[in-house]
Amino acid sequence: MPCPDCGREVSKRALMCPNCGLKGEIIEQAAKKLEEKIKPKEPDRCVFADFGKEICRALPVKMSDGTFIVLPLEKTFGLETLIFTYASTNTAIGYGVPEVALDRPLVRFPITATNLTFAAADTNICSELVQPNAVKMDDAVGWQAIQPMALKNHGKILLRIKTGEDAHLPPKAHPYYRKLESKWKQERKAK
Image (cartoon, rainbow, N blue to C red; front, side):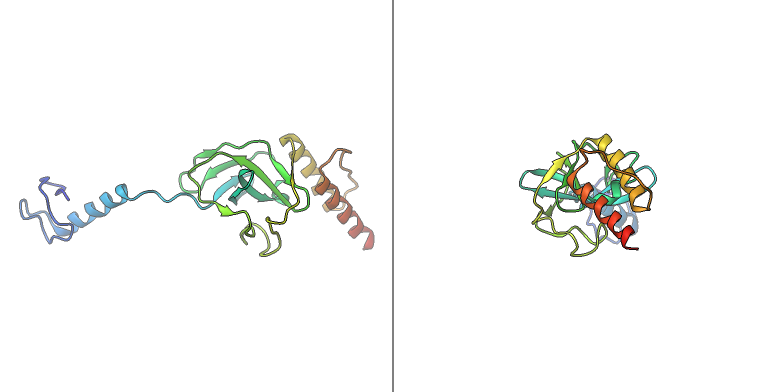
């Protein structure tokens, strides 16, 4: 490598530069900085989902029909805003119209990011997002698009239902939302 002081070639492990006498510790530090610049940047293994009040990890997943950021559906119930960013650089990631699984508590956001390492679609969502082994994506029946405003509003209604308020989803609510509404209302009646 070039000596940080005189520019002559010197070993990274030299005790000192044979030309100008620069100390080996300084040469070693310069060598480490040089290696960091040369080393290819490792892609993000996860991204952050910022809901305004809370930031959680989200999982990038490659599926047969595209590339998605997947979250537990319940994370979107109090949704005000949603910004996805790369974990390493905090750069925003654009996404399309969200889709909710027809039979699983999952929501996915289409993305076109290329600097991500993706989980295989047949794996479980990582344990930081949901209970381990609780949600398998490989046997999800299908996905249905939901407009962002409906995702926000219906999630707020579901939160009210879950806490025991007498609230009702609109007639065209997502099928999985209807299942949750029915389940939580039955649980309240059983008490």
